[in-house]
Length: 359
Image 1 (spheres, one colour):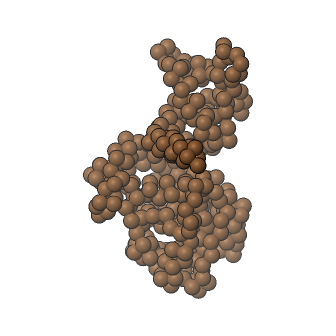
Image 2 (tube, one colour):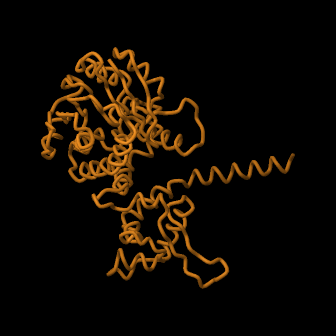
Image 3 (tube, helix red, strand yellow):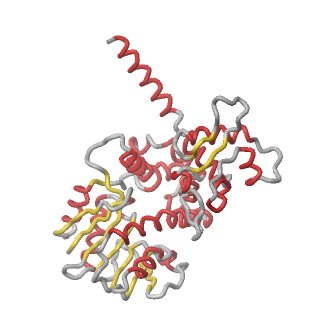
């Protein structure tokens, strides 16, 4: 019994040491993206195991001072988290460690459309965002303003608006995440059938509408609805009209309204107002299709639950202290309070859930 208690205490101490040093993981991930390591290993699909020295020869060919040992230390640590596969013979002391990409690592490789999850990693670790993280406790002490605001003097979206390079990176990051998600939606969700006029609220450059119209010819008119300064930079897309406005004031009328990762960053009261404006813009039988991260009712240690809860803390720290990831039941209640009598949730993606509210 005493041995079991000692073993339990030892595991606990090891776990808290890992948690305390966890910052090494995202910052090392950030480092290998900045160094362009995934593309250097991938090499158009070969993914042949190569050493840290060989990687540096590809990413920093003219920098003789680059340190392969330090790069190898980063690669080893990320190997323990499944980003890389290590190829090494433990019986040969002279064997050089070599690395290839796992399925996780491949998500960081730039595809034929110029997209990957690499910008998402970079976007999360910019200086302005990193300044907010030591202030997470302030979201508890004083939720009137976000840790990001306390650290930078402005809200995240206002700050991005003043920094074109940050805004550009965020747009690229969202495209890298959105395209795989939208492919999953278009393959697994039939709710766009029968819709002729579709509004995308917060549609940015119109990427989602382009994909929807490409799959569903019945959608004859797409309305890309976002802030005037956002749609002013949106490209021309056949079948899509870019409309500037404010979702808190009104939303263009349509058979269906689509939105993705919009409700998460607003408070319950603000979400209710957005949904009421959606309700007023829809005909009887019309629907709001919202794609949001949805928390499970019970907390567990699964990777999906951890990813969702970690994302919730990100929202609290960076965007809104009372914006949040919600449970299915919380969304059901919000929809009902906004007037929607019918609701269903479809779990067709690893992270986002399709929430359908019907008038």
